[in-house]
Image (cartoon, rainbow, N blue to C red; front, top):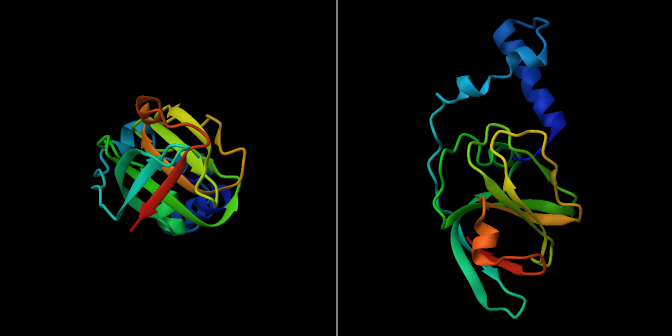
Length: 171
């Protein structure tokens, strides 16, 4: 899930204003505990394309079905509230530019590998086995990334996906 503090604060302010009539509750009082969010319905996977992980020599390592997050609302939602995901599924985040990306595990119940790729489709960073619900992990790209792929935790080790490999996708 994208770590966009300005958007998060804006959304929190909107919740405060609409639910409290403009009251002065703190942001912390409006954040649901992990126990409270377990009642939120799990979003269903919606296949919007396919993505292949390619070795440095161009051979396909693994192909998965993907959901595509290419606008701010979808990118903010990401894989929050998912309780499971098939090994052959993932989410592809497509950004309009290449920049340092920072993700977090807010309301994310499954461990993820977060794979960052640059504008040349080259994998530049993999954050492996991100801990569910841990908002304090450093899950940044360190290098400019235009694409981010979220797959189940352990996926990159299981299939031997490494930095320097590439991605290819179609809608």
